[in-house]
Length: 114
Length: 115
Image (cartoon, rainbow over the protein chains, first blue to last red):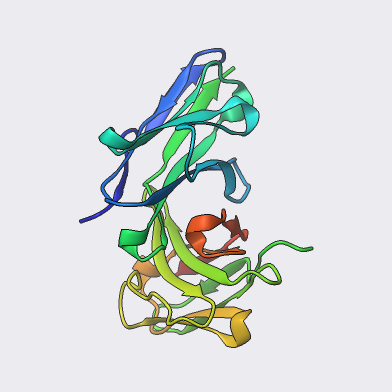
């Protein structure tokens, strides 16, 4: 079945470490790609998005993501994390092949130890 | 203006009862989604409304689940004969354009507990 996959369910790292969260999707054709973040006790909010153009997208709080079409991937990165980055991160894909509805991955819980 | 508003914020119900969950999207947003978030399950798509088009109901898990959107604004998700596995946080989100062209704005969710 067509889907969005996030490889890691839980990630634990120390402050100043680098973070990379994997996201792969299986839809062909035109896609729009998103990363959402849910901080503890808060609602989901947009971190960054890719529609077209430069495949390296920069978002808020120092996050970036790279769209690699040939690998059907949209991995999220941050060079140096902070304790405040502790949250759950969701990759999401909108694909015309899926009727234009936004499909989310299973999420990755990130814990940054101070 | 105000963000996406969901009510109630918490709902505890007995198995077998019906529940209604309400979503007030951001004014003017044409796209409205319902998702379900269960512990360890991520966000599960339930239903998608886009303007006057027929809703995409492909994510509804059973015929006990239904949703409507009146006047292109407020939406109600109804779960009939609730089961314990229906316990989850039900999230509503809206966007200003077709979902693929605009990010979603999420509400705070309704936490449903079926006892």
